[in-house]
Each structure stands twice: as structure tokens, then as C-alpha cells.
Image (tube, rainbow, N blue to C red; front, top):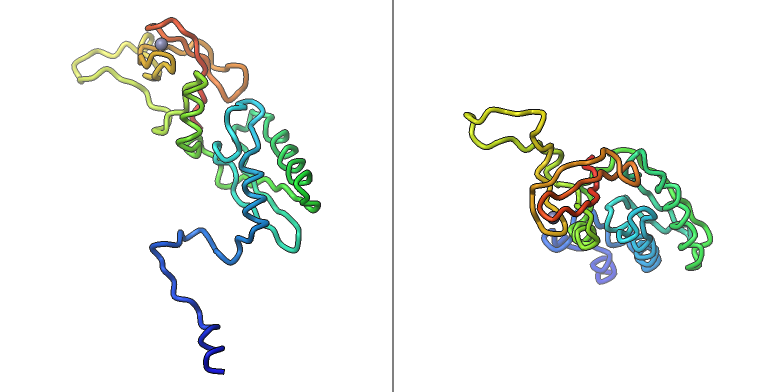
Length: 198
Ligand SMILES: [Zn+2]
């Protein structure tokens, strides 16, 4: 009796080794498998990025064989979310999860800061300027004595993904989708896309 009670005692928490948001008892093998499947789903508009790279996956849980996935949409103007939800559903069903629900979580709203470091690396490798994690910064001339020329000042010193030059200009507010801007590099003359900061 004594030993059984000892075995049932609440285990000592090793706070330093256990991240706060992970509840080890809730993460069974099915949950881990389902999460890996969901994280690997590609974004239809930025196919080099996965759901995991975008940082849009809020939660995956498996209880009594039912999978519940919570996803936060990225840009409100991007129709990709419906497609991603369909892909997530299809992949999980293909993997043998027959009872699947994909929920949309709107709060807190997605921020481009949620794109992972790996996601930013993949975007740059594809010639697309990742969103600036500092948010939409306006580049101003250094030194207060320099007069501001608002009409010609660059909106952003965005680095060209091809040559790294910050001598770039925005040529269109919307690229091929609502979540992208078009830029041109004055250094190498290459046009490139940029993921908007939100
Ligand atoms: Zn360039």
C-alpha cells in the first residue's frame, strides 16, 4: 500500500526541462503523429513554406480517436486558408484519422513575426524578401540636420534577396497575391517579391 501510494505521488516538476506550454501527458503518439502531418502541409501560395514554417498552427489534439486542429489564418486577403484547411483535413484522413475537425482561431491575430527562422531562410532562398521582424519600419535619413524629402525617401530599406543591397524600391503595393509587395533592386535591377508585415 505504501509503495503504491508512493508511485501515485505527483511527480516532481523539473521546470527547467519542461516548457510551460507542453503538457507531456496530453501528447500521445497519435497527437505527435497528427502534428507532424499538419506541420508538413505546404502553403498553396508560398509552396516553399509549410504550416509549421508559417507559424499558423495553434494546436493539435487527439482524443478518443478524434483529431482537432486549430489554425490561425494569415493575411485576411489570402484565400489560401480554405485550401490549407482542406489539405490538412485530407492528409489526416489519408493517414488514418477518420474523425477530423479543423478549427479557425482568429484571436490573437496572426503576425508575420510568427514565421519561423527556417521559414525566413526558405523565403530568402526562393528570392522572396521575408517580412521584417521589426514591423513596418520607415527608413529616415540619418542625422536631424538632413532635410526630409518625403516624396523620394524610400519607404523601407528592404534588403534585396539576390545581392543584399538595401537600395531597393517598392514598385507595386500588391504582387501576385494580397500578401505580397513587388520591389525592385537598384543595385542589381532584379525585381523581387516581399511578404508584407502584418
Ligand atoms: Zn539586388
